[in-house]
Image 1: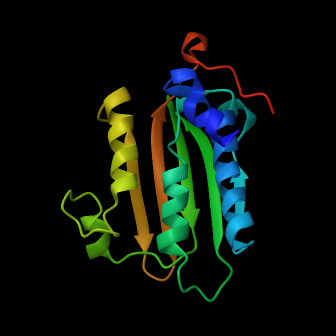
Image 2 (image 1 turned 30 degrees about the vertical axis):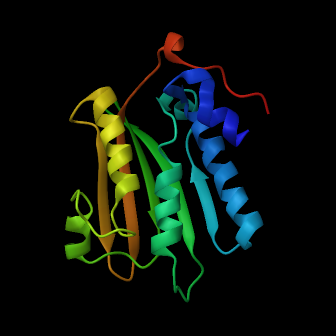
Length: 171
């Protein structure tokens, strides 16, 4: 299923329902490989699940949270993936209760020449793909507090177009 969704018959846009399923498959693979070391809660209304999104935008954000945010934690790591409609936008939040980032580190996320391993490449890739498809007002925002966690907020247009959709993957 993970591979089928990532290929999506060559289409860039898929239903949010499939993107969320892809994210859950990714998290399940990590749980099988490393054990249930964190909790993940998805809170996405049905009306949003039927809308469209760019494929493969959640997985890099989840990977960042787990790889960078959760290392060395003493409390139970948690991921919260939520979405809401606001004006003509879909706002998706990926929030963790991990290590968080200093203001300096947060400011360096968008720099092209950041140090390897802490480069924010996944975040830049998702932001750039969103802006290439939909323009400058859309993309990512990152909010973080050291010791408290990080929130990555995705802003996308509401996409209802049936002809741009790939049929949901059979499960």
